[in-house]
Length: 210
Image (cartoon, rainbow, N blue to C red; front, side):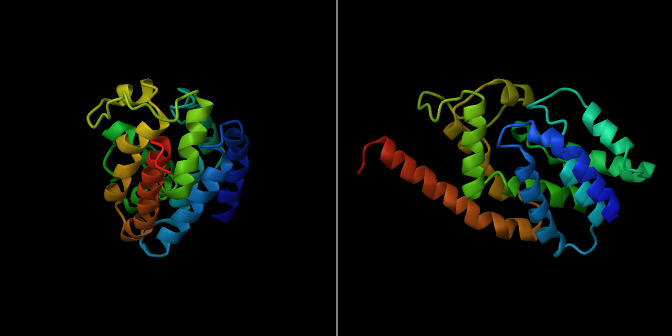
């Protein structure tokens, strides 16, 4: 198992290094650590499936590419059984938020990877990642004229370039209540509260309340 995980890490690292700071290899490392923390509380989970799914979950992220060849190529090089390969692909498919149009998390491995990834989208790191991605895409910091969308298709979610602060209300502030493991729920609480405090402080500074 360890050799396959190390092999996968080497294969994915270059792909993530080509992405902006919101989805680089440091993001993968943090999600990996989150997943290990949750794994300790979920003894029935398959550690190899979780670890490989974390390493692979963004190599074909639709925000950056419509090409699935990276995922397919790396899976082909990992000497996996057909069941393992299918399981990993299912986990990856079930991780994404997709503007609230997420697939159900059908296995404990999917639940762990989903929570681990979402934990990195909230809190102090989540704030930093949101503005890093917004900057890379040329988005405004905030735009009070934008209407927050609570119902949207995946295409609408992907295609409309909303301001970074709007993203907090359309996704990030919703994630705490969408965690699906007990440990994920526990870890999300402090990070969620920190985001709320940040947005309150940002509003004060924007409004000139000194």
